[in-house]
Image (cartoon, rainbow, N blue to C red; front, side, top):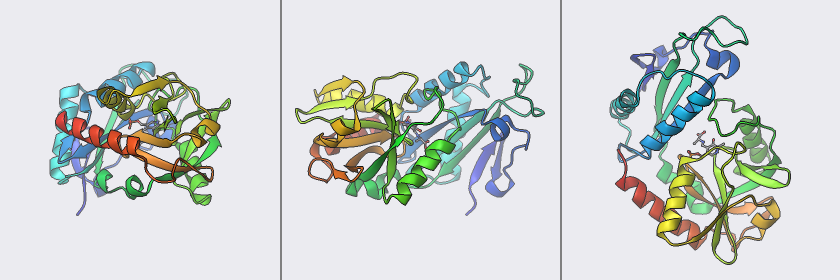
Length: 285
Ligand code: PDD
């Protein structure tokens, strides 16, 4: 069955959903995006995703395509039209269509808005059961990783490097410290049961799942440190995991060929994942 896709005001079969070759998203990667998880046909952490979208748009002086109520309506219509039980909604806003020029187009230029669904069930992700193996790789992305832009070529290259090395993902390292994964935030659990994840800055994306996991850690009364950590520290941790909308809280069992802890998903990661799912289901829209 062909998916229904939303493009600039229209709900269309995916074969007919197109954008202009002059779209700034296509020519300059001048676009931002959000990925919202759907569980039981409900949106997880929707207001937080919309708040981050607003921030990304503001940082890039890009206009909003419509208000949040309209975006919620589009998300829900697509979930219904495409019969998504568990899956994802992808949203992209670009600066719009204009003749190719490095300068931004006229302020009144209409942003392009595209949304589509993916039916891959995040709950059924095999890595959640087995744990992921990751490699470390130098972070060669641009400096404003706090803005969720569609400039994803380097993360894509890093994913391919991981695949070639027989691993599932790559962790970006800069000046000796781990920033984040190709499409997730990174965490370790120290031997004294402290959760460590990098502090927020322009070096990493301010993950919505990261924020939710921090709230869950508070519920569990766990000790948390928001600070950089090295690959060496991660290798000697008792557990490691990553967080993202599409992978929730996913265990990491191997870094650069070294087993983490017992080399299997650990109890803290598993508990955090359970609480995260419970809490996010409660607040789903
Ligand atoms: N990626 N860091 C990076 C670089 C990311 O691309 C993502 C999300 C995250 C986690 O953010 P959140 O918890 O808000 O999903 C961290 C999405 C899922 C993607 O590109 O598919």
